[in-house]
Image (cartoon, rainbow, N blue to C red):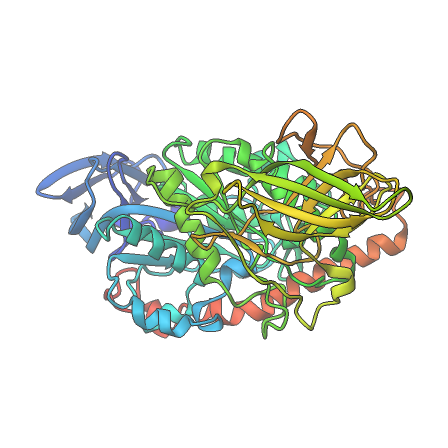
Length: 574
């Protein structure tokens, strides 16, 4: 209720001293509250402008487009009272959104404390954590203010409590721009399912009967959008990163694709911006060792859904950074929360530098475009066959060249069931582990060899579709190959992992195509689904969200120690 904020010179609690405002060519915006129809003066860089608040006391002002740099001082005056924002920088602003893997802090990750110490010199990367609004039902309607305020800070000792993925992303972008453009990072993440994060309008494009669960509490859908995103809508920014999907396996995988597309379009519209000015980059999930048994057969399928060219990647300026090689089977945070957060964050940064800024950086790992049969030989009639297949990769994905690495199944994972890398499928419907070698005659290809039963033909190839993929192919830039499944449409082919029906979008030649399988399981909201399936799903999701919240909430909530409550304009250091 805006009248509650009608105070002289009152700024929104999303803005304040030490923050980064969006640089030119965008116009940064300031907003706040005062008395109804009251005049507000904004002073910046020797100039003064006036705005008049509306009937409820809200005002908004667009500053002139300002190049990267600072520090600046901005003063807002009303009723002869004023508030001054000190040490303000102009640069590029990004939101870091998702669930617990976006939330996990540097101090819980590999080499995180070393990164905190290293970061102290990067004073022009500023951060702001959106604190979770407490209380069931507080997301029933959109808020214009955060219920729990926080402050903007530069790197200091408490950086250890900040999101690791968000920080590494920001650091890579900052370095990629020559450390000449300040970066503002807004952490806006919580353990929940995706329904909570969509606005009502986005949710209407992809409805779901699943309840919105926040830390195992059932609340209305859109609750997190209403309380944690809506207060930011007046702010100009450069983009959004996203690490989310674990709670959508297996029953809402295809819905994830629809929902994220709707979310991207909706965010760009609500922030009054364009695809060119607002990049969106997401993480392809890491393997997590069948955190719940019913999820195990579907992790590989979800990788294909995330990278499907008809999904979110069909939208302009949307990119994916894979974490396919970042499984952590013995993570102290549970396997669903790997401690390796540097790689996903840096890869998101590379993706952003290439797509949002047009820099010539290698941001893609090897991306297969199809396969061709080299030979299929046997010692005689009825003898087993030896197949040799060439897999082709897009020229822009191999970087400085393809690299083969050794890959082994962790002892915590059942190798016989869950660990596979390259495989060749036969026309009898079976998969066979394949040996991979770099192709000496083609720098953009690898050779696969495997034994096949007599009387069969090669009809499909796949890579990294198992629960725990053996990632053995990278480019020389250190980026892993993404998963793929190609089948020959002229022959009977084995389906992707443990699925009975396949259909999907083409990616390759006229005879080979990538398939995103349809899911043939009773959905928990389907009246034909049996009671045990519904119960298993409900219990599993509640447990998943609860565990994620318990692991992450301690660090997240400590991002606002007592010193952080001194007001909206605390000193620069935290």
